[in-house]
Length: 156
Image 1 (spheres, helix red, strand yellow):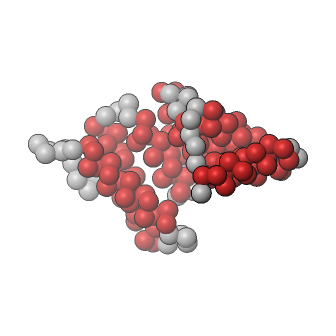
Image 2 (image 1 turned 90 degrees about the horizontal axis):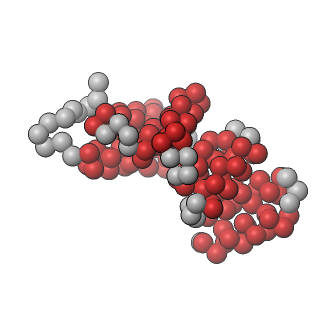
């Protein structure tokens, strides 16, 4: 059961802000620990509460996938990500997060597919460009690796 529930003053925006804060703090911790697990559980509970209130909220679904990914719950993470794909397969952030999921598991061809979708749908950040550059370098495409490396440097 979530730490709090619906009431007359329930505000989904505040719940999401709280969940985002817990997730960000957990991601800032470099080692797995009981503190990190507690932060991830709090984030998970709040994203679920927000999703209960608004079942089609793709943001909460993507974030639940991210939380499960951080918890190394691969099957659950994929379930959330693929559920979100069913809502909007062109969502740039979703494709970036799926790219990260596969990249961290060394499934570079799948990662590149999702990264390219994110990139061409407008998602721009240095980590996306760095990861794409690294993949192209692994695949021996130095020209594209260089392009994305330059792109990453221009964003910093």
